[in-house]
Amino acid sequence: ARALAVTVRTLNREFQKHHGLSAAAYMRQRRLTEACDLLTTSLASVKQAATQAGISRAQLSRLALRALKMPLSTYRARHFNRDEAEAT
Picture 1 (cartoon, rainbow, N blue to C red):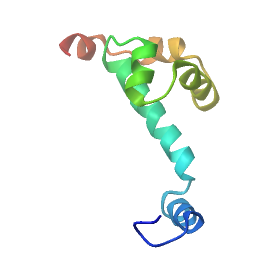
Picture 2: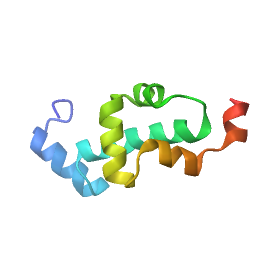
Picture 3: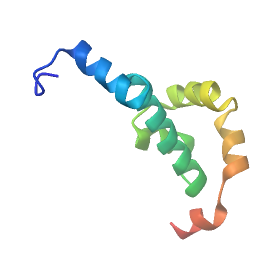
């Protein structure tokens, strides 16, 4: 906000107008997407995927339950791509 010479509130409002969600919600969504990508395309553990995405394992688990309506183990079982995971 300081670099753009606007208030934090103005920056947040403009971000939400442009992206359709708050900056915090956007970051949660990005972290969940990154972790899910890792879980379905690699042999990374949930903890490793969470760490790589910049979130704790507990936060990732709660976020997945809320957003995906299923635990990460179920998500991975449904979407895991063994060929791609073994290639990495």
